[in-house]
Image (tube, rainbow, N blue to C red; front, side):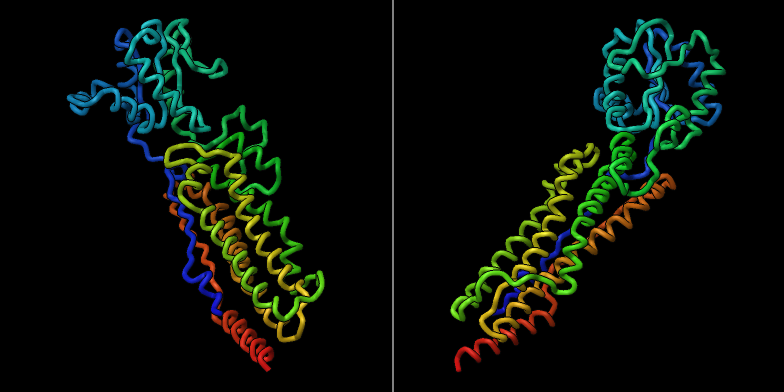
Length: 383
């Protein structure tokens, strides 16, 4: 009997290389969106911004790129991905045009997927921008001169993308680290900084793993209460095989838990937001696998053996859970440590590519101990 093959070369990978947690790299600081009837005013604003060194997407500068292109896809890419802010000049003409509405919708799609402000609306008359939440502040060009408007844009660009606004500083802000309590988790869910899905996952892993500390300490000292009547000698090896089958099922589930489709459902595909409930469920199930392994090892040690030789077999079998338990706990510790640095590294402009591995196996020494104990038991039985 060589049960170590249950774990042979079973490697589980978690790869975090997602645009949601990358430092933003934009082609433009500002993309202007306006109706043709307002071009004269916008042209002056764009000229001032360019003089100040701002990278502006302005349709007249992109005529060669737009020539022959599918404008629906081209403009969606500009207003949804390639600019840090969308500067929208709202007027009666703007709200009635087909192409300005397309630009607006592309910008609003982007605004829904990030916590930081993206749309900067400038009111040229009393028209309201369709779909824009009533709490979003406008700048009224009728009250501010062109120079003042440009200065406001430059101040906006000077603030780091994740810097808190003055109004936001009155509430608890995300501290850049993995949450340690429900209040900090709520802040992450509210603020949703870049990479919030992985920060939240780390928080849930940490919380769930803490709940297992008492069981883990019992496991470390090999503690368990004997339960039930002793097995007969004829029951020992069938019991061992049954327990091994249970152990294999646990590790198979863990492999499934880290499958790509399960991860995508929780964290979202690249460029898509994650699902907080699924993230919590995935973290809970990761830790429940550790819980099951702890219970499995304790239950094996708790079996009443018919002889000292049978006891050695069961105690050696219980050690098959040692490495998987340690591997899961080590993964959680490393993951939390790495994620603690992610937010600051993003602010520092770094690209994040975090690759972590859980490897489950039975060390040679444990397998050999079990084999020797099994051989002694079978030899004793044959006498």
